[in-house]
Length: 309
Image 1 (cartoon, rainbow, N blue to C red):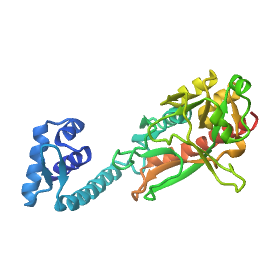
Image 2: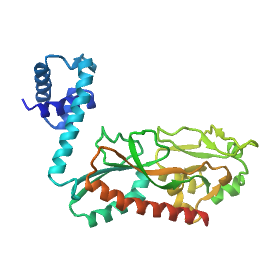
Image 3: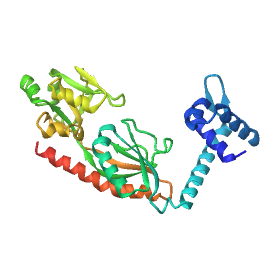
Image 4: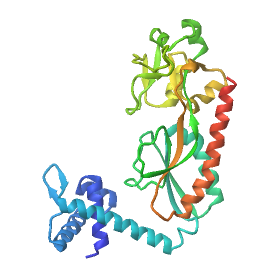
């Protein structure tokens, strides 16, 4: 039995939650996955998984073994990459993830130029507004907007983005320009609902003591993408709140205007995020060195454009 192969299949079963899901992910027959895991348990002389008709759980021995197996396989992968020169030469596949609109507007042009400069590197760009797990999902670099929670990751700051409240000139003509966040309660709103964002809007400096105010709004329209929310706001459906890069085009041509700027929270940080695993492959280092200054310049340019609106 190839023990490393069996370890990989066991990890796939636990990560995907079932033998059948692991079989699909690995593109090997279900019987092969089941047999390899059973052989591994037989060789160890202890069960690693508790199987029922609906659930799959690790035994105490399985929990310890999975942690060790993951570490062993990561070290083996690193040794192989070092032996083939990937740690010293920029080559191989690089997996990058970014928010959908930010990735399309800012990450994609940078990646295209990066590919032209490094013909031996391939990039797989995963655009999603859901934060993927860098290790479990095998992500090399993530572009993240907002406060970071995972201290095990290494962050390279590249700037910040404002969260701006906007409305079309026609809407402001009908309802008047709000002087305080509470005035929004009398105006129609468009909500960006991604499933992860709270439904309320938070404003700073919203009371005499300088505290914050949470407004629980009832939107006329809820949409799941930022460009749809911006399009609806441009058509006068309601007030919208977006990151400034999401509204930059409409703000630049006057289709939207920023309101309540005095009540904005501090800009959300933007970071290039990656897992620290000792040696860094040259493909990752090259991308960080290439992308970081470009992203910083992009965000600074948007800030300059917004200051003129």
